[in-house]
Image (cartoon, rainbow, N blue to C red; front, side, top):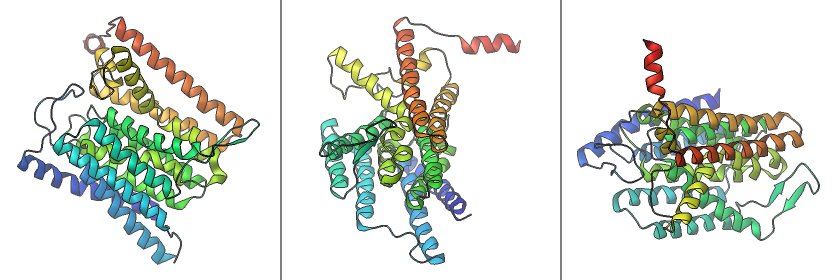
Length: 362
């Protein structure tokens, strides 16, 4: 019951703050620019990330006060947890500055790496990888902190790259947050479950305004913040539940943004251009070129993310070997989907879905 109230509170706060931010952005002329990666036209307010972050922050810390008031010392975050929260708002502020100043890519990466290093220094990093075969646990040693910095920066920017269509990045993050909530509740880890649920509620409230046709965008302040939360949720789990909350489940939950980012890196490497060069060949662009509408694309991508989340959740209930096979098998299947979409793009295939529906309607 307490967790449901937390979710409802974060939804309410997001619903409250988003129209306020929208009104202010319209009044001040803070609109999202039209660019190579964007598909929208017209003046759409940005800065919805402010509403998301406020909804998350207030609901999470109010929940901590309420839970500890009912049962003293039930949830007591340590100092390093507050370092992580501060770093998260560092990503949020970086995105906010970028929304106004359009920072150079290298500057953003440098700040992100410094923030990620601070998180590792606080003690949050990947120490091992759990496998269902001998050796059952591979200790990463010095490679753990290095991998963690790459993971945080990589996942954060992967979600940012997906933020090119109404409801895309916010929906993907919402599904990921729900999956993490379910995993942590099942494994009895209350604090990370509370983080994930507060985030899910804040995104859900924002989606009412961000679903196509969107009246506001989250901007980089939102996409970097949500990407950061998704990247650190697996770091909050305890070491006894690595098969459920470790690196393999984390990759599976974030697989769509990860594959889309790898595809973008490969494209730009083949063209001999900078990684920061925008283009219109991301996953949603390819689906648009195939003839799908924005809402159809969201239905497809949400469904794919939900399937990946289910493969992780099933792993909580089955034996480790089957869980591992389900997750790694999904990697191969979804990798094949990306290869197929690349092939269809190269062949300039287009499906006339709307025309087919019109004929069926007649």
